[in-house]
Image (cartoon, rainbow, N blue to C red; front, top):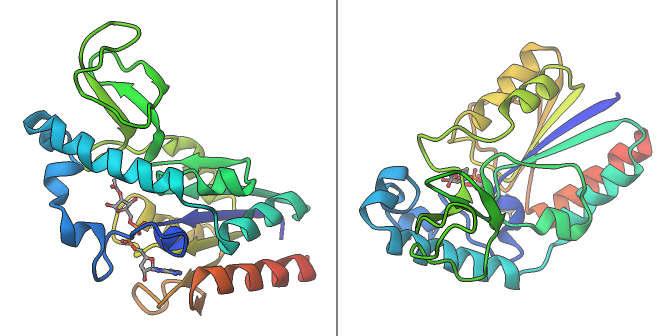
Length: 231
Ligand code: OAD
């Protein structure tokens, strides 16, 4: 086995104290997704959207990587083949655990984006819609997050990697949101082995070749040990 592609979701950061979206008490049970995570919601009420992401940013900055993030960083360092880590998460816990090849397909809380000219710059801890863009000076600052109805980042690169991967692993994601939810079928159709690591198997039975159930901070380090032992 040479190439491993890993897709992570909110479940990998749950034990770092960051809320998931669709679990009981998840963020989408507390907030209306269409108000805080769509371009239309932002156009209607930018202050509410900034309030939501400022809270996410504060939580993420105060959180620490857990054993699952650390195990994936160790896998990247010690794996003799190649590895791409694609995350739907907008926190930076993978990077802070030491992962280097991380693709943030849904953007990042660490970034600001000008809704007017698309210039990007490092996010302040508290972001304000009225703050002028450093480039075009328009008061159109938004978080550099991919919202529903927007196209995730680096999709060509991800598609190429998924098509040539030997093993596709999905960790801590419900598989409810496309295009990420479709990667497993693309990998399997291209001949890859597929593995889901999640608190509970999340999807259609048989979608993944293998399922490991349990909290990520325990299951992911154990799986990484297994992979590195077998080589
Ligand atoms: P979800 O909240 O949909 O799913 C989280 C998954 O993690 C669930 O399947 C849980 O069972 C699992 N989980 C919870 N705690 C866990 C633990 N300790 N160990 C392992 N697994 C655990 O989150 P995502 O699948 O990441 O997008 O959501 C996908 C996208 O939907 C997000 O990127 C976000 C959201 O709306 C945007 O905002 C654009």
